[in-house]
Length: 151
Image (tube, rainbow, N blue to C red; front, side):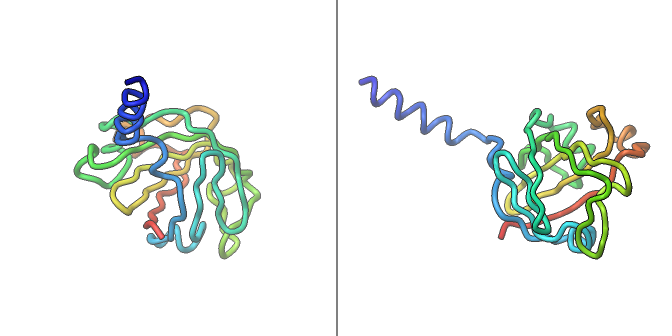
């Protein structure tokens, strides 16, 4: 009986949306992604792009209203968004000698996965970004928005 209960619990937990949706290989789709990062790979602990790998730490789930403010979506409940902490030095160069945040260190990554699409926003600042429409429109630390599709 215990074995059935444990198995049922694993089935239920496996069906819940989790942080693993970002994990995998992603092909650059947007102009900014194609010209700066190229394709990328996200694992539980690493972000890899242009043959460079950086440690990441998942901080929290984004709320539906934060997803609506940050990403071009009409239904925030159609996917899952997360905020990650990372450290990418401002002197790191990617495709075409581009950087993510100019000379600033990239310290935050927000993601939103819906279907086979992934949106990423990078931020430079020691403090976590605030995900409201007004704050994001006036945020000088927002480095760029990038779009990818599942490979």
